[in-house]
Length: 382
Ligand code: ADP
Ligand code: MG
Image 1: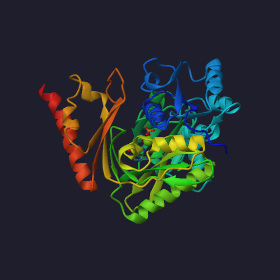
Image 2: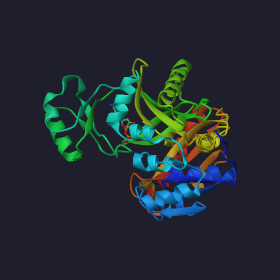
Image 3: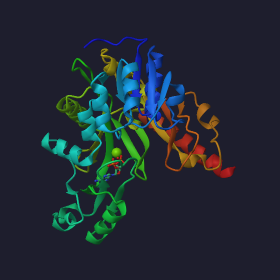
């Protein structure tokens, strides 16, 4: 595949924080970037070289993007796959529409994973109210009912203990197609960001150990404090996933680790991932530079981690009493602050993150937790 060299214009569909970090990585390497998003005040739009403000399905906007750009990627799995298909008619696009279509729909995703032989939690598809009474429920309760599309950060999910709760949850979620998944007793959650280049070369990043709060990623500790063999197994599975999809670009595989160390795939994201943000500061190549490299047909960068890392998400509730006191992060010479430029801080909204680097995972985590506590504590006093 022809290499797209620095100086060329790249496009990204979606202007969120992942788009912003893609823009930053691309610009650092000398590329120009056009962002397409429907919000005028997106995190990525204002720092892009060019910004197209339009809906993801707007045909003339897509045409404009394809005309301007040498290659186009995406940062958001919920863009219509048809938009990517349309762009791909006249422009290099990665990831491809088919992979995105699978990852954006829990039913297609589960079917792909099961058909490919990957282990997942027991589940059943509920496509209409009547299905609640025909599925084999005994093995799925207590469970979690998840909408098939447009869920994120734990939204569009409800835990259910019995049939009555399932009926209520299905009505409440008000989404025609849902997946009922058995609630698994997790030892921990891990994820692997993997990239596949245009030449079929595959590189995985080190395994992240992820702690969630209220269904939203809270902290990632990397490398995960798990047996090496388990980490290698997770990385091998991530490689199989991108191979099986014939994927080009960056993808994240989220895993559940069961009590007996069995690995299940929770879900896949066809893009860089929140749990991979540590790579910006702790690896030779970040997940966003890797996205640029695979998109442009460059050789993938080395993913070796040079420092242990703990990443903490900064959610909107931290702004409850005004702008947090960033000195509490900045005074640490091993802490890296990332803010996404979002004007409005809503509870649960990802506003930024910080990463603490150290020689040891334990120290990185301890210091990150300390800073996190101070940030939360400081605004309670003001
Ligand atoms: P999202 O698209 O919001 O990330 P996920 O399906 O990854 O949705 O669920 C968010 C979080 O909820 C998971 O990371 C995990 O902590 C918890 N969770 C989801 N499904 C299960 C399950 N079947 N068993 C136990 N915990 C789960
Ligand atoms: Mg998830």
